[in-house]
Length: 328
Ligand code: TXA
Ligand code: MG
Picture 1 (cartoon, protein in one colour):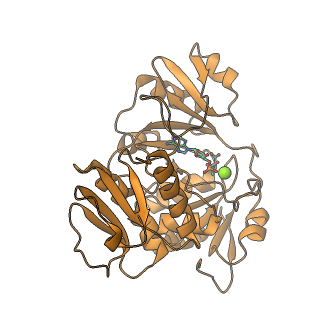
Picture 2: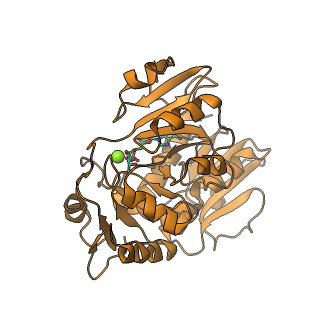
């Protein structure tokens, strides 16, 4: 169950005290809804995987999607991306702060749940003064998707967020109507080209007018050709869903358990998602454990079934896809 708060506070985002309150909430590991020039976002401290898991829980998405990391200075890009091609720098010079998200290879310090297991991360420096002030005062980047529940359109006013999330979000910073009202344009960098992943507030023509070749991302399949940027993380090793460690038969295997009370100790080949079945803790560990087990010198990963409620649905969605894709 998502946390519920006695009352959701709607605060004037242009007020310094409201920013301080929002930062205190973020530092406690809770989420805050905040305005950007595109749409409102539902943000958490990028470096707190447990807080990031709450975003997915509150949005009630049946699956995990990678989140955009929001920064308040252009040079923070170098703390998040492993490598910043010069084409990416050109784009930031022209479009940041503003509604352009750039997908780059992530540094290890970015938690895997932020990128839903992908090795790349979407980064953007918004232009809305309230968003910038919030990130600056927090002193860390904010991971956020649009602040709408699954299946709803993105919010462009504080009242939209309030209506959708009732008392699941402790603070909504009101920054007025979003200037663009549509989400950021998302791109990645290819060989001397910019690849568009989502059309949005920056028209592709504006990128082309800089003399840059722009191509469009096609398909949305997990089993993409090598070298293609996948949209969804899937382990490389075969994966089988089991009801418990007793069903593990293959010798050369690893085990992803749900609750630690199971019999085998944690090891290179055995990881538990939670101590006592807390689905948020499990989600916070889910991608990093799966990635670690996938790296091992093993033939198959066994994954213990997770209860399909709340965040458990999104985790099982990933496991079922991996089991289908990798069925031996
Ligand atoms: O304008 C916006 O972009 C707003 C504001 C709040 O910044 N955010 C937003 O977030 O629209 P969201 O989560 O609703 O949409 C972000 C999209 C998702 O569809 C996700 O799949 C994609 O960005 N995305 C994020 N990181 C990615 C990555 N590393 N690779 C591919 N797609 C990525
Ligand atoms: Mg969205």
